[in-house]
Length: 114
Image 1 (cartoon, rainbow, N blue to C red):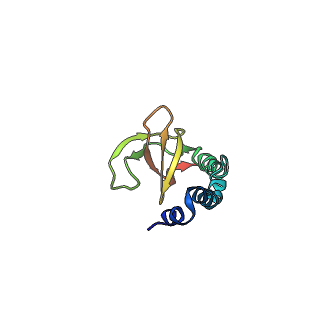
Image 2: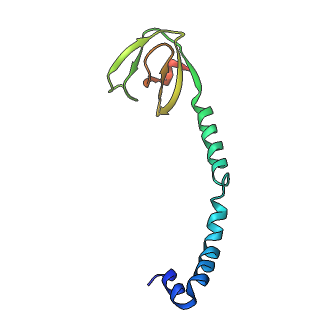
């Protein structure tokens, strides 16, 4: 038998409602509007700032790939001066969107100035 059922049988419906209201009060206070959203909004904003990094290709004929490693297929090449919005990093590889080109490509960090 649940706690709610025991309370209903022993004290009646009015007492049960009062007991449940008291039991839920701390939970309601924690879930008040803004109580949980402010820190997560700040964390999301910080993460977005870290991801808005612009990198510049520093050599000609640099391969960009479909994944973070030389085992992934070459999707194309870019030349010195090409800009890329960095979106993530895995090991020595940076993933991002080429300005005026493909998105979600990977370039080795040695060929980027970020």
